[in-house]
Length: 298
Image (cartoon, rainbow, N blue to C red; front, side, top):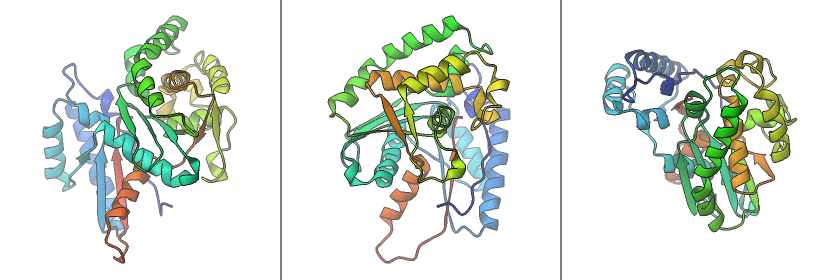
């Protein structure tokens, strides 16, 4: 359980130029935010940092230059995770949350820049995939209008179905799942909007997202503006713009894998990193206080 949690929305993937490089404005915002968070960690007496970055910095054409400037200015050395590592570490968190009795697990995780899919019966997934189907990415590339048009949504649905044919086959060939899981803020928001318990009810309350409920939700939110979606319970203004794209990715993924419902897991990539770190500590060593900073594309 976290002692405290602080968040800042960077949207780095929206601060990229035509060549795929992070803009000076995006770089400056990143440096200022990391500096503030590192200072907060020091004031909280954290003795170890685990700073990591995901799809935006992974794909930026000037990633090395940005990382070097961050290191020189803030003293923080960001670790850029591969997409496969994202999927594997998130799967580890899901396995630890549900336990061995859950059997074979399939996990879906929707971020701003990518969709991670994994399947396995152990702590290491048999299949771990990362696809460039993030909610933020698809919003920019497909759903720029507010609200998005019906035709664009229909075309995006067909495109997602085609993109997921091969990945879904790889996941399904690994074995029939005993439990299907959804992780990430996108899935939590979608579950809340289809009737799941609010976050105030605590992490141990069972939350599910059904395919039928998701279809009904898409028909509702796709007619709304981002400002109107931000008024819905469980939807932040930062996430409202990409909610429709996230819902379409969730729907297409569940359809491709023939999943009628998903269990929502409160643990994801951040917890997977912490768990892997704890696993590497020598037996009997003193527990360290760790702070984790996630620089993500959303």
